[in-house]
Length: 221
Image 1 (tube, rainbow, N blue to C red):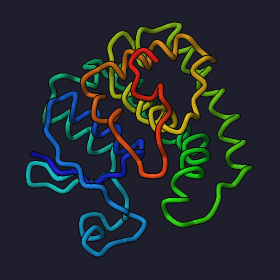
Image 2 (cartoon, rainbow, N blue to C red):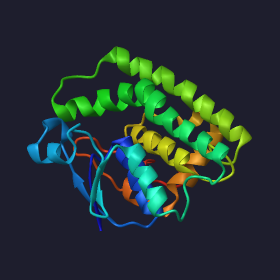
Image 3 (cartoon, rainbow, N blue to C red):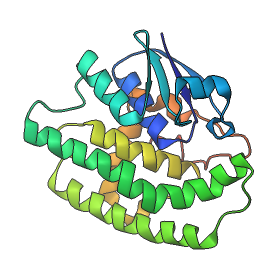
């Protein structure tokens, strides 16, 4: 069985967890307070970041390379299309959510509301929270545009792009920071994603001091 050091609400950890579950790879989850920079954890990843995955006798870090490794070594079910142009679009969207969405939304909402308290870094910065609440509207509108033209975010099949987006949105949904009424098409897309068996463990996450809203693990909202 694989072993992964993670933080429950980390979208990067959730993306890897979704990939592992979709490919039916069992994993032992170990919650890691990476901000404490424990010496043992630093030996696993000197960057002091999660996720860190131990699999096949290898210790891996960074969610992007980990997901690529899983795809190359466990190609079924595939989360990357075979066509190079289609793969390019999946990778573009994964980067969109893990870079642009993360910087403009996740870091402004989740990190301010939850991570600061967990790390003992004080209270949320209201300016950042307001900026994140404004920016997520733009991203939901962009997702709406994509899904108006495609069955899934990157095309006609579910891919790693959908898992990357769902990882961020599920983390934000845990703290009620997603307005699902803004877009029916995005809400329907998320309902399909969170109904998958791969999502079960994520919907079961509980963070002490931060109870999820009632709709969080409701497959029908």
